[in-house]
Image: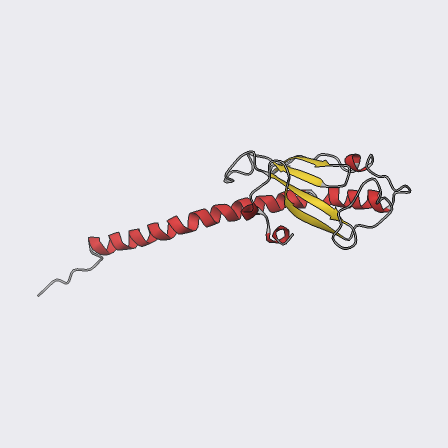
Length: 160
C-alpha cells in the first residue's frame, strides 16, 4: 500500500507568500493616500459652518464694505484633524490641518486648504465692494501658505 503525501510543498508556500508581499507593497501606499484624503474631507466638512457664516455675513450686509466683518464671521474650531480655521477680509477660509491627525502626509507643515467665495461668474468676492451680494459658489484648493498636496484633496475639491 502506498501512502499519498498531502499538503503544499515549500516552493508553493514561498510563491504564495511572495505574491501576498507584492500585493501588499502595491496596496499599502494607495491605502495611506486614501486615509489622508478622508481626513482632509473631514477638514472640509469642518469648514461648512464657516462657509454658511461667511455667506450670511456677505448677503445680509447693509453696506458694500464687509472686509472688517468677515474675519470675525466664524470662530476657530479645532478638532482631531483641524488645527485652526481663519477667514480673511475677502471671505477666503483657510483650514489648517492638525499634523498629528494627518499622519501619512508627506510634510507636517504642508497641511492647509482654502475655500474661496465666488461671485456670479468666476470673479472672487471682494470684501470692500461686494457686501449685500450673493455668493454663487465656493472654489476649493491648496492654501497659499503651507499648501496641502493636490493628491490629498478630495475629488470635490480637485476640479477647482
